[in-house]
Image (tube, rainbow, N blue to C red):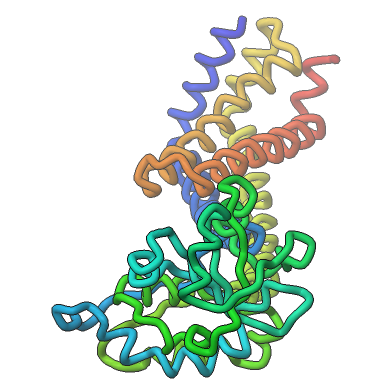
Length: 346
């Protein structure tokens, strides 16, 4: 009986090719908008919850001299104006590492809750005494650390590599310009830079980005939250109402198309009923049409998505399932109110 219902359903699709294609077109048109908007909304909403440790990206537009210290000379004093009062960042310093024979991370930001100092070194605790000839410092205890201002990478070094944080007291190393950073290390300072919400509201991030408005480096902000919020507002304010209206039109179109099918296939349905078909058999027969319409739509969207399995394809699959459920309910209600139900007798 199941095979017979499927076979009859396929024949119904063949007899109503125009209706089938129109339904695919309607659901596809609505689907591309729903899925694109949902995909964008989800990406924007959950992006702020992702631990993105690289808020900025630096693109080299002009190569430097052979020594590789051009960026340090060009941007050092300008970065002083930013990091002496705002933000936090870190990078390595190969010059210090060679002089002290140990790995050193140079950190900028308010990482000690008990002082206003903003320059720190992160070093292996076994090498702390070796640094006394290089700089004046004070070891920061774990209780005094402001972990909220630290990057995840720095936290992991402190937690797992037995490193310690040193608060630098020497005037020589209190500024960005006081270090001899190689160009790659300056890029590290830029790409690891982060600003608090209050600093962003004050426009400190824009001041930071304007430093690089020249022909050597281009700095890209990877966390443009305002743009994401504006896009989500547009989606909720305009796209969602449009989709709801279009969904209503699609359901209404399906009602018209299905009533047309009931009328055009009335003779075939009556023969099927007189052969012993019940309500579930008629539903199964018509479900073939509904399922094939939505599967064809999903396949079209999947092809346009380059056969990729991502958020968009997952949303497309959920959309297909919801459309099948909604159209099945509509079809059942129409069938219940039709004259055929009297012939079935259940």
